[in-house]
Image 1: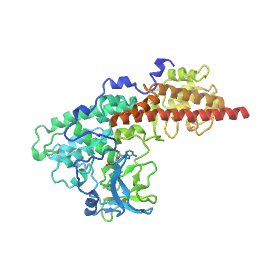
Image 2: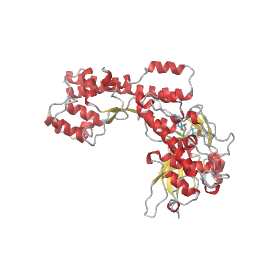
Image 3: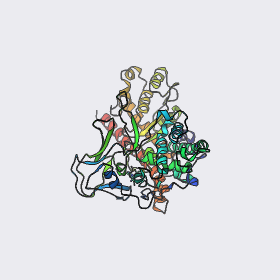
Image 4: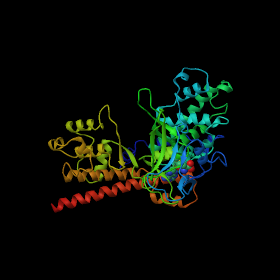
Length: 492
Ligand SMILES: C[S@@+](CC[C@H](N)C(=O)[O-])C[C@H]1O[C@@H](n2cnc3c(N)ncnc32)[C@H](O)[C@@H]1O
């Protein structure tokens, strides 16, 4: 495969991103450090108060057959000490226990108070880094002597295994440009934000200081952002004056001790409190929970990029994992030729094909060239439709199908078996190119993991290995489909 074609496949090249790799490792402050292991259970203080007792004392409910315990590879977790029936309420939090960022419009107007300064700082955080906003509140509460939330805060991990705390070397070890890009973006933001916070708080009197006069740097900001991204749930806030309620992120004491599974045995339920605009938040058993079984919640159908970036772990054989590719006609021509398709015309579509590419947002001013491979659909619908359309010379047949049909892999061969086989073979060749883009092979990764590696290096290697295994899985499934179609055709 031509090097120029292969270098285009992933949405950005690793070299480009790593040339400016930022990392928080050399800036570890008082309040944070990289996790010594993905499953590290060390807390902010060595012997924090009993969280279960605190929740009960504050009027919450904790099922008597639950306890917090070490979960081998997931840190702490919540476990059933005896069988718990389906439908049982496991934890109920009264509305004053969740920690949220409450934006008080009256303190937004440039006043001097601590809350006003916190609001001003929060308003400088871009929406996509929402975790930093609640993180500011978390830092404020953490710095408050005698804080109501201290029993909760003191039970938080002292370190997180998210990649902003990896060494530069281990960030490069991820080998996947879209994630490197996100990690760098977060690191750069934290360094910039540290400057802004310092500037804004330089001459603030102690009584007005949102962090009780304590130094806040990129590391402590990173700790707070990671605490929130790995533990907060987006839930309905209280009912607003207009009767609606907006989704807001909240830290849920004790509930956030539950680990993640795609086959959860419990779920979060919100209930309107009688006579108040508040919502109580519960965890309810969705299935019977056997003795010694952990209570598991589903954090969401996320890719490994998001699990690693926000939570600091990677899920093996994650059905929602995918790789990003850039839609590029020249690359598709190369892939298609490698797949044995004769005279493909991806780089020179004719006018009716161009129109469809525009409708698919793959061409024109509004083009969104990022497409994906993997996930539940295996192939990005827009990519599949483009391949099917560009491999066909039959305008009438193509125009006889709507875009949804052309984009669906479950629609078997809408433009005929030869076109379908050529399209799928092209995707397989694209997958090979994507695989070649990783500097190491799976076997090399496996042998590195057999050695003595740091936990962050292990996570980085697990991440890239899972991406490669996922691509191979896509290739295998598509090859099976090609075989089936070819057999069907030959027996027809
Ligand atoms: C909401 S907290 C759960 C409580 C956490 N285990 C603790 O020790 O505080 C989420 C964190 O738990 C760990 N975790 C949760 N589910 C996991 C899983 N399926 N695999 C690995 N780690 C997991 C990760 O460190 C994640 O950032």
